[in-house]
Amino acid sequence: MTAPDFAPAHNDASQVLRRVFGYDDFREGQQEIIEHVVDGGDALVLMPTGGGKSLCYQIPALVRKGTGVVISPLIALMQDQVDALRALGVRAGFLNSTLDFDTQRVVEAEFRAGEMDLLYLAPERLRLESAQRLLDAADVSLFAIDEAHCVSQWGHDFRPDYLALSALHERWPDVPRIALTATATPATHAEIATRLRLDDARHFVASFDRPNIQYRIAPKNEPKRQLLDLLRTEHPGDAGIVYCLSRSSVEKIAAFLVDNGITALPYHAGLDAGVRAANQSRFLREEGVVIVATIAFGMGIDKPDVRFVAHLDLPKSVEGYYQETGRAGRDGLPSTAWLAYGLQDVVQLRKLIDTSEGDDAHRRLQGRHLDSMLALCETVECRRVQLLAYFGQEGKPCGNCDTCLTPPESWDGTVAAQKVLSAVYRLDRERRQRFGAGHVIDILTGKKTPKVIQFDHDALSVFGVGEDLSAGEWRGVVRQLLARGLLAVQPEHGTLALTEESAAVLRREREVPMRREPERRAPKTKPAKAAAAAAVAELSEEAAATFEKLRGWRSATAKEQGVPPYVVFHDKTLREIATVLPATLGELGSISGVGENKLAKYGQQILDTLTG
Image (cartoon, rainbow, N blue to C red; front, side, top):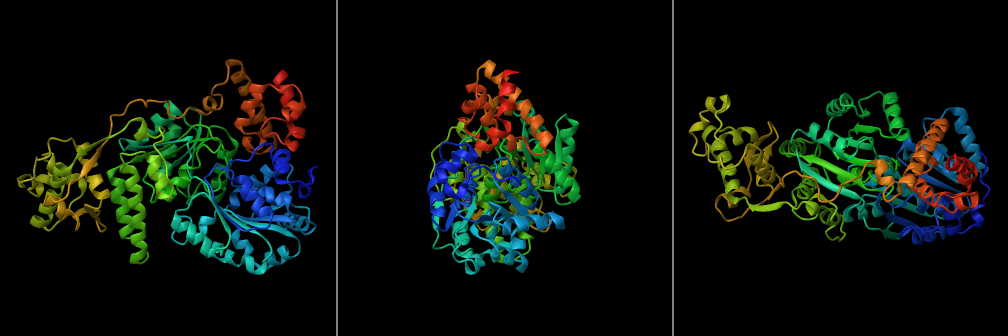
C-alpha cells in the first residue's frame, strides 16, 4: 500500500480536513469533538446519519500518533469502508473472517510496523487474546466504537459482543475512546454510557433532525400498488430501500417490482450468504438499484444517494424507524421516508408481542415501543416534531412532512368507538367467542356474509348501526382504538377484546378524537425529486448536461476499479464541478470533496472530461 504524501501526525485537524477529505469547513459540532479526542479525551457522540460521524474519529486517528482502531459490527461492509479511505490516500485495513491467512498476515505486519492509520475490527475478534496481543504490539491512537447503540440490551440491534467493550479502558487506560451512534433515546444514551463505562467521558449530542427527508405515512390500500406508484411518479431510476417484516414478503415484493420494470433485489437472512453479498454489492456499486429487505439489511450502509426508504410493514419501534429511514439522503439532497400502515399491522405486532419470548418486563417494554410508533403514525401534528420529541429534542413544524403539507382533520370518534366496543362486547357476551376486526366491521356495516348468517349475528342489536361509515373508515376506527389501548388483540387467534380502558368510553366518560385521513392528492410542494433531478437542482441546462457527463465518467471509473461510484466522488462534488467548470488542477483542488489524493488520481481525467 502506497503511503500518502501528507504526514498526518504533523498536521492539525483543519489541515487534514482540507488536504485529505477536501473540505474547507467542519460541519456543526465536528470540530469540538475532534479536538477533544485529539487531546486524548473520551467522547460519547450522538449524531444523526449523514451528520459526519466518521470524520470525528478518522481525523483524530490521522492527527494522533499510532493507529486508530475502529470496532464495527459490519463485517460485510468493512471492505467498502476501507476502499473509501484508501481512495483518499489513508492507510486503512481490516481484520475479519473474510480474509485469507496470507492477507491477514500482511495487515498484521503493517499494523506492527506502524504503517497503518486506521484498522477496522469486529467486536467478536477483539475478544480474542491473539487480537489483544496484536494491539499491544504497536501504538493505538484511539478506539472508535461505531454503532454504539448495539450495546443496549433492550435495543433493536443488540450485539452481545459489544458488552465486552467495557474492558477497553482497563487494558489500554491511556488510549482515548469515542463511541458513536445515530440512534439513542435519553434512556439508551444513559445505557451506552454505563455499559461502555463512559460516564466520565464528554457527551456530545447533535440535533437528530434530518430536514432533507420528507416523512410520509399513508393508510394501506393495496400497498404493492402504492409502492409502485411512489417509485414511478417520484423516484424513477432512483436507488432506494424497501423494508418488509417477513422473508416471504421480501421475495414477493422484489419479484413484483422486477415484473414491473424496476431493478430490484431481495435481501434477508434466509438467502444464501453468497447471494446476499452479491445483492448488497450490486446495490452499492450500481446506480438506480432498489433493495427489498428485512431489517437484517442496512446498518452501516454508507451509500449517499439512497433517495427513498419505504416501509410496507409497521416498524416495531421509533428507534428502528428512525435508523432505517435515516439511510435515505445521506448526501443532504431531498429524499423520502414513506410508510404504508394499516389495521393488520397493529393486530400482528400486538400478537407478536404477547407471544414473544422473555418476561413480562420485556413484553411491557416492547409494548411501549409499539405504542410510541403508533402515536407517530396517528398524530395530527408535525411528524418531525413528534419524532424529535421521542429522542428528547425540541422541534417546530417543518413544512416537509405529510401532516404539514396536507394537514389531516380531527373528528369526534366517540360514538363510532362506542359502536365498535359494543359490538365486541356483545359478541363476547352472547357467544363466548371473539372475532376479528373484519367480522366486527361486517356486522356494523350490515353485511350478511356466510359467517354473519352462520352465527345469527344479523340479529344483534348492533347489526347495521355503522352504515354511516365505509368499511375502510371503520378499519381506521378499529386501528386507532387498538393504537390507544381501547381495544386489545388476543394472542391465540388475533381476535378483538375489550380492555380496562374500554368501559370509560362505553359509559360516555371519555371522548375519543380521531384522525381522518386526507384525500390523496398531489402534495403542495414536490416531495422528493428523482436522484438526477435532485442533484442538478438549480443547475443551468448546460451545467446539468455537464453533470450527467461527469456521472458517466464516474460510473465507468468506479466499475473499472471495482468500487461504488460514491467512493470516486459524491454527487455534490460533481455538481459543484459542473457549476464552477475548473480549468486547471489548482481550481479543481478548491472544490469541496476534492482532496489531494483524489486530485492527483482523478484531476486530469476530470479536466479532460470537461473539455472533451
